[in-house]
Image (cartoon, rainbow, N blue to C red):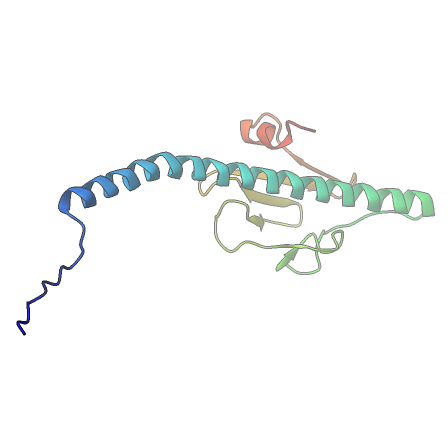
Length: 150
């Protein structure tokens, strides 16, 4: 019996197929990355708006509770320590951000806070203890952007 040698073919991609596939992946990445970045920025803005609404609602609740009980409502500080911001008024306080990263809050003083919209862009908020208000400078375009729905 004659044994015939069987040829073993290794399956592989041709150079043309690889170039075509990589071109499609590169094109999809060029389209998807900017949209992803834009979506992340919008997500951070929504988170910050939610944080502001929670802080303001908690201050109003605190003020109303003390008005109804007839006791003076005064908070010289909104937190018990600098690690958890707004811990005196929020059930779930916001962690004090270590770095200037989008969505992070930083405490500057007992009455000043900064929230980072992007890594380079921030908005400064002031807490007025006598009126129990939490406001930013509405002349600032970034402040307007955060408070436009209010």
